Amino acid sequence: SRHNVTRMAEKAGCTVMAETRGDGIYLEIRKLNAPTQPAVPATGAAPIGGPLVLVVPSEFLGRGDEELGRILVRSFFHTLGEVRPLPDSVIFLNSGVKLAVAGSPVLDDLQELCAQGVVILACGTCLGHYELKDQLKVGEVSNMYDIADALLTAGRLVSL
Image (cartoon, rainbow, N blue to C red):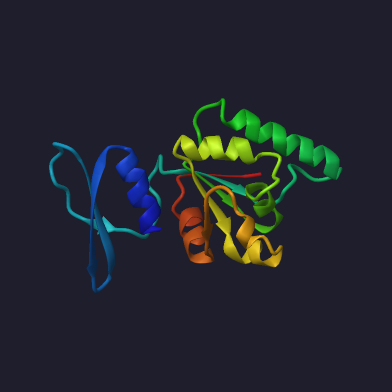
């Protein structure tokens, strides 16, 4: 979404100017002291080397034994904070949203990722389904429009 692109650009030391035109929203992203480039549409194919997006569709990692899946997901998120590159964003879908709420075994790791600039999005419909909207403790409630935009404009997409 425009909001996520703006945050990532500003994090990279750029200025962002948005302009709404008849055919869409155009963003001008410029590094300090860089020459001005023509504005390009905010939507469309992701550039090579675009954002790294991690999709978490379940509270478990892998298929099979659920207890093993819980152990593996805890290990994965603990390790993720220690390796590079970090994802630009993490999207939690379906029962994966349970990892971003109160009582999650990976909440501390996710809060650390967030502190390091990783954007964390939790599907609002999924939180509602599990009656967890008021228990989200890290990241932000998102909608399918922003989730689809993040997925379709990712330079690299990893799904657990």
